[in-house]
Image (tube, rainbow, N blue to C red; front, side, top):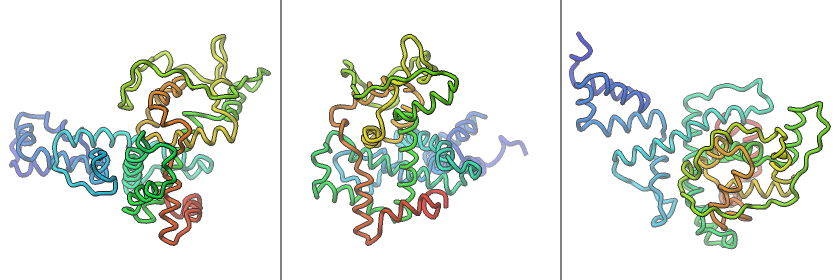
Amino acid sequence: MHFDELATELVIHIFRSCSSVADVFSLAATSRRFYQAFAASQRLPILENAVESEFGPLEDAVQLVTHNESQPAHHIRCVPSSLALIKQVVEVGRVAKRWESVYPVKKWKHNFQDRRLLTDEERFRLRRAVYRLWLYDRAFHNRLHPRFSRLHRSSVLERAELLHNWSTNELADLEDVRQVFRDVLQNHVCPSNGTIQRKFRKRFPETNQQLTFNIHLNYPPPPTQFQQHFHTMHQDHPSDKFISKYIPTQHHEPGAEGWGDEIPHYYVVEDMLKLDPGQIMWLRDHAPLKGQVETYIRGLGEWFENNGETFGQTLDWVMNERGEDAGELRDSIDYGVMGIVE
């Protein structure tokens, strides 16, 4: 039997077997009959099934994209499906899948002989952790939560309610992925003076040039206009994307790319951990130079500076309420007993 002569029920079954959104649209484009079968009343269920397979868990992604200030972050929202909702889920899902390729490189950074691809179950848990960390960032790392309110009991309890939605093993997944975010920030987005010095010497082992590091972190004045969405914050400058921060030129001093020594750099990274997974990935890909990162951060507003992330503190609080030790949880992640890969 010709493929185009299959019963509509079988065509719908084939659509539901697609494991990605791209596969669904490619199949729909094969013939007018397939497109009509897709465009009929089964379109949303077909797309939902593909999104769940490629970017799931759909439930956590929906909680992220539907969050707003009118409802507490820990409330589970039930929303009707729509093409607009699916489009938003696909946007955050693509970011989550980007972290699937970054995670193994960072997780097995030192014992690289053990590095491997993630299993389907591990990819699912990693995406779930990304969505949940992103929800936390969207809910509590914003101008409505300045540094002066971070220790208020009401603020701590509000943040803790969201973490109470998840089991201890699921919180370990979040902390595991958060450590990968930290590694990307402290080694790529805002490297310390020591990191700059080490990478410079590795690239130019025979040079005697001494790098000149900035003592203070001077943020540039804010630009006149800023768009809020992370991937439209700046226009790409192709020439800038290929400039190496480690190559000295007449107009570029590699030492100026450092973000301070150990203690100042620690607090810089704590500030930067308020960035959501999409922003971190965007800066990693599009802001190779310190000045570009500074400009981006300045555009977020004054609330961002000197206002460290609160997830770690909230995790400690929740683990203490459960009668467990957050330090032991982090040790278990380091030893591979808990976390995304066990």
